[in-house]
Structures are given as structure tokens and as C-alpha cells.
Amino acid sequence: MVNTKVTLCGLEMDNPIIPASGTFGFGYEFAELYDINCLGTFSFKGTTRDPRFGNPTPRIAECPEGMLNAVGLQNPGVDAVIANELPKLATCFHKPVMANVSGFSLEEYVTTCEKLGDIDSIGWIEVNISCPNVHGGGMSFGTSAEAAAEVTKAVRAVTKKPLIIKLSPNVTDIASIAKACEAAGADGISLINTLMGMRIDLRRRKPLLANKTGGYSGPAIKPVAVRMVYQVYDAVKIPIVGMGGVSTAEDVIEMMLAGATAVEVGAANLVNPYACRDIIADLPRVMEKYNIQSLTDIIGAAH
Ligand SMILES: Cc1cc2nc3c(=O)[nH]c(=O)nc-3n(C[C@H](O)[C@H](O)[C@H](O)COP(=O)(O)O)c2cc1C
Image (tube, rainbow, N blue to C red; front, side):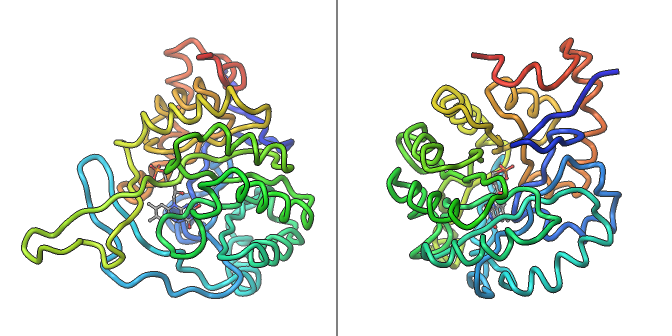
């Protein structure tokens, strides 16, 4: 029997598989398809202090080996998440969940994290400082080490929950930003968010997305993500949640060898809603194939 358990920031998970924020709603939508308690956990839709309608449409464009999205953090706001979404989730998911938080100002990050920090069912708070699809917030905090540290320090002061800072790949030196977050009190680092991209409609001679630019994700970005996980593993001592283009159990092993303790799966859920369930079912076979007894043993083993 192989052992798929991992421990992320002090919390044990049955396996390292986490549907990525923005691709799994608030979970209960997927619970109609399968028992989502097979997951390690999942990261719920990026939540902000105030409700957000999101960007104008079209906000999705298909690409070879991936997709562009410019959803723009559509969500009902933290109070409605606590009042409506989490109680619905509690009926079908019985493990600690990962809260994903975004904001447009330090105060907004702080208020949202403070409110979510009081909720028992939340195991980790993943702070997204890397959304490329909103203006005046999100990614602007994640592209400078100083700003990233400032957000980390501010939210650290208001919650004792494990704090995982989610970084942007749209930077030249990801390791220095991860280090700044670690020094400011982060318990973990998540990476990567989407790569900023664009497509043009040939007939209209205009950008395909109403937002003009969007975030590129899916299998094509996996080598970039593996490289960044590898670099950040060398730079920090706190655990890494790796993601970007993961769609198979082999991809999960690759991310873990690079240095990830847990692995998020994003765009793959939109291609196949059973993707995470299928990856979890396939993990033991792939572990046996590569002679892996326990997943914990291979974290960072490529170094
Ligand atoms: C439609 C869509 C919505 C997303 N929304 C969020 C979000 O609200 N918060 C966040 O931190 N990341 C969000 N992401 C980024 C993913 O969580 C993930 O970091 C990224 O897509 C890379 O993983 P993948 O290649 O497996 O999709 C979103 C991605 C997609 C495709």
C-alpha cells in the first residue's frame, strides 16, 4: 500500500490534490458529480470584501494547450460567502477547506482575512496577490517584494490560520518575492497564478477578450510552473503549493519532485469536471510505477 498523505502547514491531508481557486466554485457544484471528500482539500473562488460582478464578456478564450480567462474575481463578497456558500459546502464537504482571498487595498485584504479567519471549517487562507485580470489591485501587490511583504504582514496580524501567499509568475525574480513573504510571516507559498496573455479576433481585428488581456493557464504553462516551484524551493523553508498545467498524476509527481508539498489543479477541471477525482484514483498506480512508497519522501527530491 502506498502512502499518499501529506502535511501542509501542520494540517494532514489524505492526498496532495487541491482543485485550484476559480475552477471549482464553492465545491458544492462539483459535489453533484462526485463525492468531493476524496480531495485533499480545495481552494474556493477568490473572495473579496465586497461583491463583484466580474469583467464584461467575453472573458474566456481557448488556446492551444490551455485557455485565457479574464473573469475578474466575480464573487458574492465575504459576508455572503460566510452566510450562504460555506453552509452549503458544509452539507457535502467534511474536511478543512482552503479560503482564497483577493483585494484592492491592504484594508480590504485585512478585513476579508479577519472575517474568514473566524470560520472553523477554514483550514488555510490562500492570499491571492497575483490576479492579472483586475485593475488597481491583485497582481500589483504580487509583482514587488515590498508590496508582497506588506500584504503578508498586514494579514498575518489578524489571523492565526495558516497563511499561504499566492504569487504571480509575471515577474523576473520569483524567489525574492517568496523570500519577502516568508520573512513577513507567511506559512506557505502558492504558485503559479496565470501568465498574462492576449488573443486577437481576426475578423473584428480586436482583442478576443473584452478585458483585452487575460491569464493563460493549462498544460502549456507547466514547464514555467515547475521551474518557478523549483526556484522557490531553493529560496524558502516554508511549504509550497505548486500549480500550473497539472492534469495527470504524473504531473503531480513532477511538481512534488520540484518542491511542492501539495498540488493544485485548475484549468483541467474545466475540461473534465472529474479531473481531480481521476488523478487521485490514478496516483497509487503512478507511485508504484516510479517506486514511490510515500509522497512525502519525494518533496523536492529533484534538488
Ligand atoms: C477561470 C479561472 C478562474 C480563476 N480564478 C482565480 C481566483 O479567483 N483566485 C486565484 O487565486 N486564482 C484563480 N485562477 C488561477 C488558478 O487558480 C491557477 O493558479 C492557474 O489557473 C494555474 O493553474 P492551471 O494551469 O492548472 O489552470 C483562476 C483560473 C481560471 C482558469
